Amino acid sequence: MRRFPALLPTLPLLFAASLLWPAAHATSASPASKARGPGHPLADIQGSDPCREFVARLPNVKAPVCAAARLKPTVGRSVQGRTLYQRDVVAPEARIRVLVVGAMHGDELSSASVALHWIQLALQTPSNAHWRFIPALNPDGLMVRPAKRVNANGVDLNRNFPTPNWRRDAKVYWEDRTRKDPRRWPGPRPLSEPESQYLYDEMERFQPDLIVSIHAPYGVLDFDGPSVPPARLGRLYLDQVGIFPGSLGNFGGVHKGMPVVTIELPSAFRTPLDAEMRQMWLDLLRWMSERIVPEPPDPLVVPVKARKATS
Ligand SMILES: [Zn+2]
Image 1 (cartoon, rainbow, N blue to C red):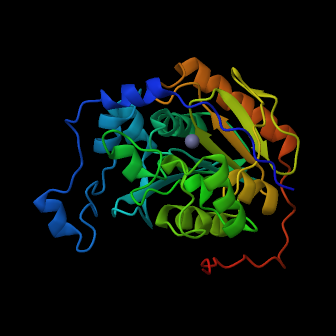
Image 2 (spheres, rainbow, N blue to C red):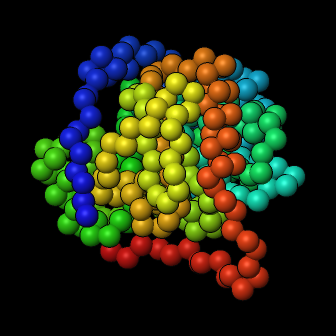
């Protein structure tokens, strides 16, 4: 069954606002960075300290918040060669695995900020989870001025996951439903992009019991997959908008059986207040404790090897 929902309203004011952002921290390749990354002009531009860029770019992320997140470089790279960072926080009695992803859409800056703030909360609040945070899946879209939803190849990463019948449905959806909106181009083939391939591989490696994907600015919750969805997180209420070909919720929740909570923050450029971010976190923990049941350990289970997409 395919449900193609009506397109969410565009918000021209947001795009206008994004044009007003200062260009002082533009990250075009400098001669020095070119020397560091043959083939990738921006390779290692962040070096071992992604916080320089994040603090300059993200709303409500001061240096101590980013430093305390202690992000670790991964093997993942963006199209332009930026390192993808992650952070694991493992509760002593961890029984479930939760993957939290921010800034899959680069112009949803607040989503990366919330992921960084939640790393602090994961360190401070007891849970039963092994958390894996990827605060910025689309760093090229996040850092370019103005920020872009799509990655540096112009692909909407949230339409690039290998849902069944992707070739037919993603094309039909993009051409007919979005009228070839360049902000929603699903790409030439599933997992054509290094960022979506990285997240796919991470899902295979980590085998999360739950994925939390943070977006903006529609101010609702969405949910795909088995289990009963959370009714609310803080002031965000469940409003299941539908299923898109190639989306993470469709791929993970519907086809892989990994529940995906999609959070749509109310603003792409401002985070909720600290107290509100904390309430959302506590509501998430409460719902997890009720609805995400850890699987009993099974020594016969062999982890599934990461598969490359075939074209
Ligand atoms: Zn989004």
